[in-house]
Amino acid sequence: MEGDLAHIGAGLAAIGSGAAAIGVGNVAGNFLAGALRNPSAAASQTATLFIGIAFAEALGIFSFLVALLLMFAV
Amino acid sequence: MGKIFFYVVLAVVMVSGLLFAPEHAGLAIHPMDQFVVSSMFGDHVGMFSITNATVWLALAVLSTFALLVLGSSRRAIVPGRAQSVAELTYGFIYKMVEDVAGKDAVKFFPYIMTLFIFILMSNSLALIPMSFSPTSHIAVTAILAALVFITVTVVGFVKNGVGFLGLFWVSSAPLPLRPILAIIEVISYFVRPVSHSIRLAGNIMAGHAVLKVFAGFAGALGLFSFFPIFAITAVYALEVLVAFIQAYVFTILTCVYLKDALHPSH
Image: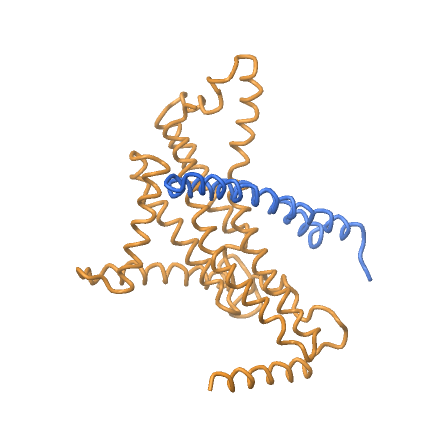
């Protein structure tokens, strides 16, 4: 195996993807819980759902970007 | 008939997996090679040379043209396939602009429609095997996001004058908290174009890299080189979904930012 500290850092940065997964799961799960209680209001809130998912996901993408920078740019 | 075809394909894949197995175990295809911008004619990449990025950006524009112009040229009362897709896309985006950004944002509809259909077309064209994905490059998405940022800021100041700064001054919060909130609001305002562009590029790049990582496993597996096909099929289905959702998210966030510019009060 070859590699240096930057590769370890990239691996640590990939933990952020898991954190983003928790965040996106929270958003979608809470949406589903709310939608099942009041299905008639669910359709009007799908845009909010996607905005929430996008914001939660963006931070996971940032960590992915850090991993990429450590792998290929540093 | 279908079964025989399946077994023949399976046998061909297994044999070629044995024949082309790399000497050392590892990725036969580097997952990042697909994002290299290279010239279509010759090796030189200059300011005006035609690269694979230019070609696929042009194809995205051409397919937009084909869908919208050819789709609306017939104007049949009972729409055909192209016409229904064009009309559905138009209606979908129109309703989104009206619902999210408000009735007075409808005059920005052409811009938002252009953004959506351009991103959707380049995302979906990038799903063709051996193609190039322009939206996986931050250079492309940063320009799109910077244009949205500049448009929104200019529209905000032209519409509301100095009142646009009320976006940063949360008047519903207690007075001592307001300066702190103002700093946070200013930071979040300037991070918008960064997250707006990186979200699109990162999603597309990550998805295509995952596809290529699974494809690279095939070379290392030898006789079982058919195995990654199942994984690739599943990831590909997810990517089709992501191609649409990311175009949708980019446009809906543009609408949200536009709403902030038109009605800055909290």
